[in-house]
Image 1: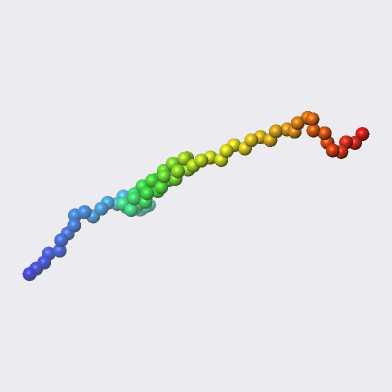
Image 2: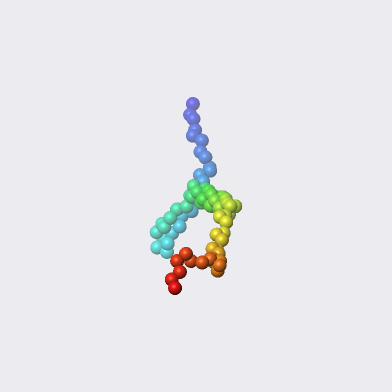
Length: 76
């Protein structure tokens, strides 16, 4: 009648980064990797969509007026 707890051997992973004084600088866990991968995928998707968007047509340069046009008010 004695039940034994089942232990799991999969505890995941974590990367601890220390400085030269053996002080903990940061810890990287699996969720950080998934967030980074999701950010890369989203950025790549936005870059592809932005590259494939139609571009605005180039603005034509204005043409100078024709020389035959006479000004309505001429001072002699």
